[in-house]
Length: 246
Image (cartoon, rainbow, N blue to C red; front, side):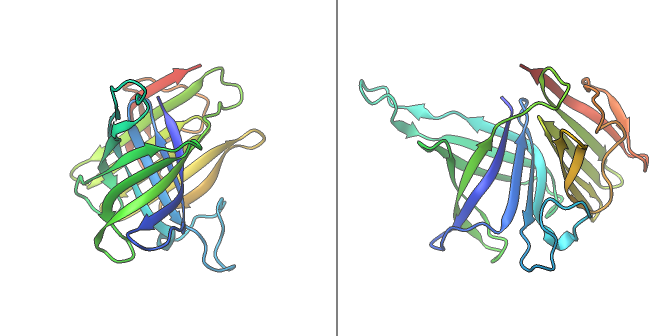
C-alpha cells in the first residue's frame, strides 16, 4: 500500500543523532517513490518551509526518485517467539533520477518497526558532509494519508518524463494530499513539493529550479494509465501508475 514518511533524525557512525533537513518520502502502491530532502534554514535571513517563493539550489540536500523493492521480515517459527525477528525487512531503492548523479544508483537498508510506531532504518551510504560511505541510522515516521476535499477515495499516481538525447528524466508522484517531483534536464535540477489546502487548493511547500509541472497536475482529474500530459515548455509526461482506494 502507499505510504508517506518523514524523517525524524539521522545518525552517522558514532556521531550524535540530529536532523538538519525537512525530508519527505512518497511511496505509491506500485512502489514508485519520490524522496526530497531540503536543508532547514540556518539563519533568520533564510526562508523557512513551507515557502511560497522558490528556494535556491543550495537548499537541496538530496532529491531522487525511482522504485523501491522491499523484502518482508522473517519471524521466528518457535512457539511463543513468533514476534521475534530472525531477519529484518530489507528495502532496495533504485534511483531512476537523482540530483547527484546521472547513474542509476541504489541504496538499501534494514527496517525495524518500533513499539511506538516509528521505523528505524540501518544501512550504509555516502555522508554528504564527508563524501565517504558510512554506516547510518535513520528514524522514520509514517504520516496518515488524507483525501483531497471533494474526492471520495484516496488517490495516488505517478508521471514520468524522459528524453534520452536531451538528458531529461523526471518523476512526479502524488499520494493523498501531497505531490512531489524531481526533474533533471542535463545538469539543471528541479524539485517540488505541494500540499492540498482546503481553502486555497494545491499550495507550494518547496520549489527549487525551473517549473516542472505539466498542465492538469493540480486539477481534480483522475489520471489513467498511459495518459499523456504536456508542460508549458513542451516536455511530455506519461502516467505510469494510477491507483485509488477507500
